[in-house]
Length: 139
Image (tube, rainbow, N blue to C red; front, side, top):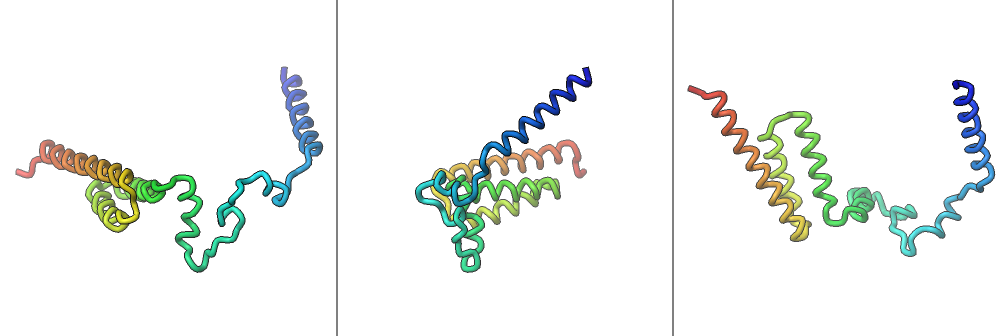
């Protein structure tokens, strides 16, 4: 049984290598014709990184995520902060500070989702306060 497995594995390796040699590899120049008609600056490497580094770094994410780019980044920051400190209040304070900084650039749909998440965070904070007060009374 083991020799049959070895034979199949050898056959798969030979077939893979054979196809790799038989199929010509594409260069960047030949693959450019298969891309979009109007490529973005980061796709062809013409973004002016040193004039606006933040905009150049965020451009691919804005293309894919649209108006939710900052929301996704905000969520990543909040998730990492939560994993590091495990304190609801610290995460809430940083979240509200980020919301105050970045709210100007959002469209209405994104703001509605953000306000919903803020309401959820406030609900969790109030729940945590009540649970701590009930289980660990101070007097």
